[in-house]
Image: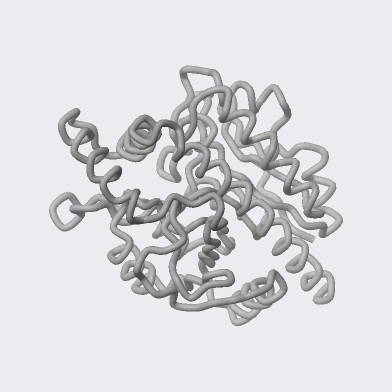
Length: 311
């Protein structure tokens, strides 16, 4: 039975699922508070939880509310994250600060991974990973998501790294950190809004069962750290990379002109891209998260079945 860290507060549903060895899927909360406008953000959060349940797993949206790390949220908690003005964007380094102050915090990929691991959850669904920012050779701006993937035993289902980032440098960094990058049903590394990035995926699986066996083999050998399972957006939902390139370049110029940097860079860029595309990127973002939720639930079901055999 999984030992759950005493600082965490779990919903009854999540606690029962973990006690039973049933499949659970972690969900981040930054996408709710900082990634999308209201009301699309709360609608997306509710829909993703519904998709996970439909796939046979229990959803566990993770956040810090009133200084308490929460594993699973009720409707009131989701609404608070979607509408409250004073919700901090919380990575791993920020967790002690937000918790000690009794504040609200929406967890990034890195922080969600860490809290999910403390709860014993092995599968986590997000939209896109953070990575190495463009121009990092000068700024050294690289997401904590990458180092967290090297440390924490959680499989992260995403649509690749966000296309505003330097994909080539991100893949190089993940290789250096010994993080396996596994593409689902494709040989191409996806680029968030787009199915193609021009970069080869290092590894490939074609079924949820293959992904679950990969996870079991990795951790069974005692190889610590996460798995990056990248799932391309569906063809009917994508914005081709040829269209996105100029949009991203314009958004980056606008960000530089506004003097935005650090942890505020990604929310600014994604918001600006929504404006430039007339909302098309928001629709694609929602579609890819839903697609990842379907896959994440399937992988969680398969992995839970493998763990039951081990038990």
